[in-house]
Amino acid sequence: MLLFTPGPTPVPESVRQAMATVTLHHRTPEFEAIFKEARERLLKLFGMDECVMIASSGTGAMQACMLNLCKTKALTVNSGKFGERFGKIADAMGRDKVELTCEWNTPCSVSDVENALN
Image (cartoon, rainbow, N blue to C red; front, side):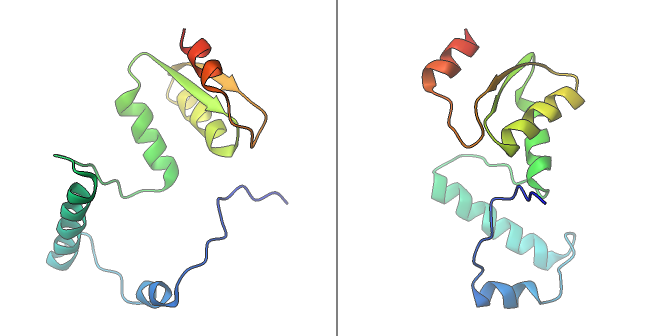
């Protein structure tokens, strides 16, 4: 069996305990307060005027990226499982794409990306 995940990641006991508590519904005042605080901290941390927080899986974020940032054609860089997934998302959404394929776990060079863009 092949498992293409970016882990395992050690999880501190305090985080595991927090995850064992009752889940807050996303339309409660308690959740809204936490969401507001997290957003304010992100704005300050990154020095931004605006930020978008997406409550989804990584694939959901990738699809949102493709939907909102790719208007005509996408350049997907396939050098691993996530790059392969970006290409599949582009195909599923009917987006034209140029796929730059490199050996898995091997970064593509900047010149390869520049050539693909040209």
